[in-house]
Image (cartoon, rainbow, N blue to C red; front, side):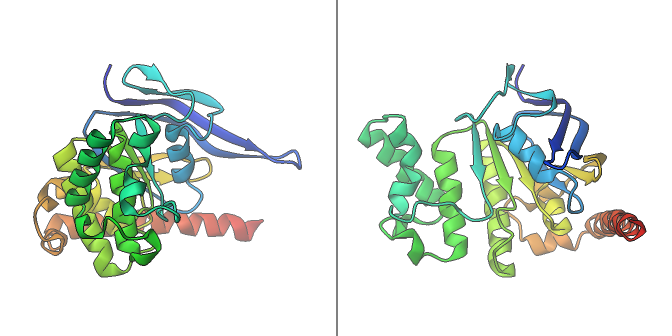
Length: 267
C-alpha cells in the first residue's frame, strides 16, 4: 500500500518526578503519495513530536507509522528532514553538502555530480556551488538544505519550521520554491509551521492540532497550494476564501491559547 498511514498514534513522556505528559493521543491520518500537508496549532499540541515520530527519531507509546506498506521503526533514507536551521556541514562547501547523501551511498562520482548540478540549478544556487555555507544568507542555506534532502531521493520530505528564521521577503520566495519543488518532484511533504498564512499557502491539506493531549482538531482541504504554483503568492492571499479561512483558523487557535492560559491561571 503506497502512501503514509498514521495509525492511532499516541506518545507519553514519563518524567523523573513520577508524572507524565501525554503529548499525542489517538492521532490517525492517511496521506497519499504526492500530497502536501501543513500542520499547525498552539504551543504544546505535539506538532514536532508527531514529525519526529514519522522521521523515526522517537518511538511512539502506542500506534504505528506505515510508509508504503512497511512499518517505520527508526530513521530511514525514504524520509528526509529539513530543519528550521539548515544543519549543514560548515566544513564542506555547497556542492559537498548537497552530495553528502549520494557519497554515503557509494554513488559513482559522475552520477553524483549530475544529481548535484541538477539540484543546484533547481534551487538557483549553481553560481554558489563552491562557496562555504557560512558565506551564504539564511535563505540560501535553506535552499542548500532542501537540495541536500532531495539528493537522497526520499519518498517523504519532513519540514520542521524550515522558513521560520527567515525575513518576510525571503520567506515568501522560499514558500514559492517549496511549491515549485512539490509540483515538479511529486514528493509527499509534511510541513510544521506556526504561521497560519504559511499553513494556508503551502497546505493542500491542513491539520489544526489541539493540545493536552495533542490531537487533530480539524482538517481542511484547500486550493491555495495549487493556485500558488507559478503564481505570485500575494495574489493568492487576496483570494476571499483565503482571508476567510485565515480568520477562522486564527480565532480557533486563539480560543485554544485562551483555554490553556485559563488552565494555567487556575493552577
